[in-house]
Image (cartoon, rainbow, N blue to C red; front, top):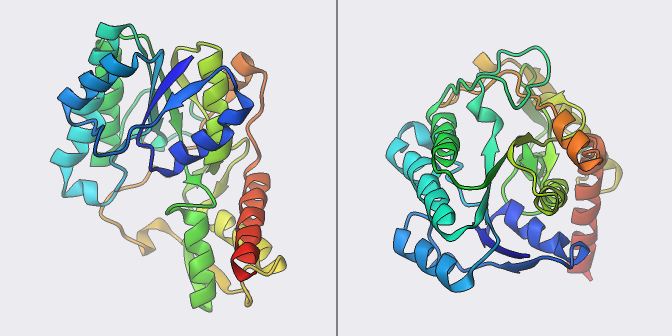
Length: 295
């Protein structure tokens, strides 16, 4: 099975490439950004025609949640209009599109895990642009799968876990929001899930995230304590819980975006990782990397 991967420099795409050795039936082509910008229709059409993939896995996205409030045209171009054109190009060529979306398409008013059929009601421009992409895929007549996920982290790239480690080395106290809840998700676990979903020819919407949930405060507290225990940070800072209104940001965040993974579990027979286990794995990798660099 031939997979064309967009957004190859991103956190998820890199982990997707790292797990492919477990799926020998997959062949993957990752064009460099200069050869495939999803906003360039000519490039999109040319690469699909030349490579002739079975699957287009779209990991390209505009992800600057706060900047999107003032860069709405760019957000909608990348996350909405261009995604729709990708899907149309896939339909014309008989290619299935597998697209990544987000918990930000929901408003966070739920009190229990959000299912695939929950109504979409994004709060900010980023979420609205991602909803636009979802709806354009639905309208395209393409064969499609949209995977919604949340709170991504990894041992590489810009993410919350790595930010906490940096702040843990720089500060004695870190204030972290304690009234927003989600399902922290290791991109490597998500990459494995994507491979299983592609192999199983799953369609429509799927939610994938960490098996359990927590607040940003709980995630920060656990990350720093574990990092201190294995020597990634020398001094353990005080982590102070604050409310969302004490840390105002340009874009609103959903207060509760825990995603139900029941459909994923039923279709694949697999369980996502618990976020604590995933954080431990990421910290272990960072520790090994720091030791390699030291020697």
